[in-house]
Length: 133
Image 1 (tube, rainbow, N blue to C red):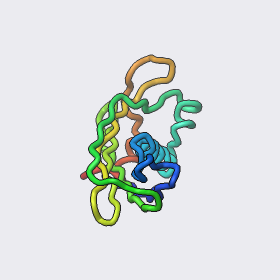
Image 2: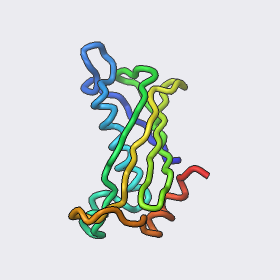
Image 3: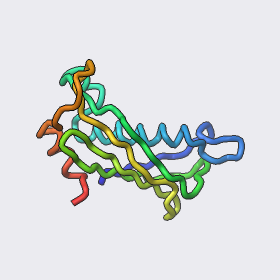
């Protein structure tokens, strides 16, 4: 799995002092951006230079415990590889408790709308290090 820490900022919270769900979604997207960059496949480079991307087609999360400004949240990303898609599973913990968990389903597709394609072997190998066994 890939892991990073998100520090909840005051600007991430609602009037009750709890991280607002759109900011949590932003933190999740940022985690996948950081993961792709860490494995040498930044999203922006993929679409510009390689002619395909991993567009988001589904996402689902369960919020279990609130997080507040100043909290350090450890977000774990584990990819599950399909033939033409990848599911990024997430578990976020704060103070040892699960704060939220869920997934993003992404399909491998050529830019310009040509439809789904097989995950390139070199991308698959880069992700396998972090994948579930």
